[in-house]
Structures are given as structure tokens and as C-alpha cells.
Length: 273
Image (cartoon, rainbow, N blue to C red; front, side, top):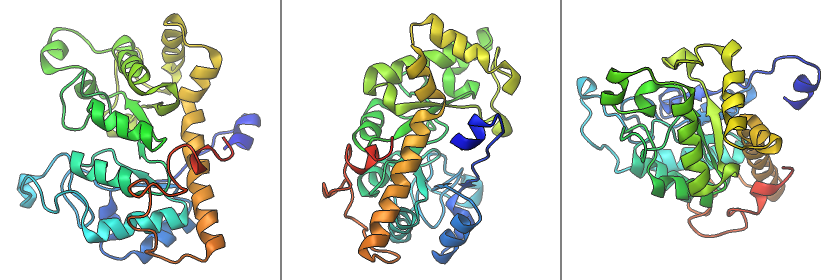
């Protein structure tokens, strides 16, 4: 990624959005990784075999909960993702799923496209306690350009949601857990689009707003991608440590932040950053 940036080229990081894609076959995670995937979102809309979703699908027979968070298979999947160096993405996950995943994972966790629930009470957003949990595992939440996640319906009906609203969420997260733990997501392919940032060509508007609010160049670089790369490096470091120790698929469940091991926040997560 960094080499592509230096060369002025575009780098793409493949990912799997929804653990439903692996069904109940943990071996598929290694296949995803071999094909270039670097993270997997545990759920999408609707519960799956791994975990509960923030948005159950009644049309698919979902109740409010199916597993009470992670299933046994979901716990095994996180252990295997840690072994492989696949980052764990908790966007779309139920609150219970997210909090359990953060405690269980041996590497920092991502929320790739979520906003702050304190500013917009939507089930896809993260409340302050969830933000604290991401900070404690040295993870990152990427604010996303979905207007329904940025402002309540009454505001959206009165005016267009724009770049200032987006950066308000960044500000809240920075005040709560620090600039080290926030990033940016467009979700353009999933309905994301706000006034002033309707496509990639308008991305400089976000940088301009961050500068206007007093963020410096190093902070903006971290928000635009440095924090994501830190978590990617941490996931790779955890995988290398596991390989050196001879760990196999499924090992490590219940041994991460939950138990305060060497893989806890601020240790491996800082490797190579």
C-alpha cells in the first residue's frame, strides 16, 4: 500500500463484508486471505452463523438475538482470523457481538463504517462505551458518509447533511478516545453520499474541514489511513507471533484482551507503526 502511494498508484485492499460468506467452514478464511482479503466483517444486516447483527432481518426470521452476541463458531472464527492476520471488522455487528469480539480478539479490531451514536441514535452506530472498548484494544472506528448515520431523521428532513456533520463525528470520537482511533469511510458503494462529498473527487473537502478545525498534517494523515495501516500491521504481527509459536487454527480463543495477555492493547498493536 505504501509503495503504491509513493509511486502515485492506486492500492486496493480486498475484504469480505459478512461472515455469511464462510458459512460454517472455517477453512474458507484461509482461502479469503490467500486471495488478498485483509479483513472480514462479522455480520451484515441479519444474524448469521457467527454472530448477531445490529439490524435483525424479520423477513428472514430473525428475532432480536440469535446467539447473545458471538456464537461458538464466531469465537473460533475470530481466533482463526487472528492466526491468519485477517482483521476483525465489527461494523454491522450487534452491540453484544462487538463488545465480545473486542475482548476476544488478540489483535486490534476495526469498525470500518460506523458513526458516533452520541450524535445520531442509530443501531449501526457505536455508543461511547463501545468507542472506549475500541480505544482499549487499540482499534479504529471509521466514520462513514451515510446521512442516516450522521444526523437524525428530523435534521435530514430539514436540510442536507454535509461535510461539517461528518467531521462533527470525527471531533466527538477524537474527544472521547483520541485521534489514534478514528478513520474515514465513504461507503459510496453502499449508499454513502453527503453534500460536499459525493464522490472521491470531492475528498479534499474533508481535509479542508479538518484543517479548518485545527487538525495538523500528522493527525490528518493518521485519520485518512495511518490508523488503518497501524491495525493492519498489528494483525500481521499477531499472525507472525502465532506462526512462530506453532499455533494452529482455533487456538487463542478467549486469550486476547479478555485475559490481558501479551497481545493486549499497546503492545503488539504498536509494532511497526
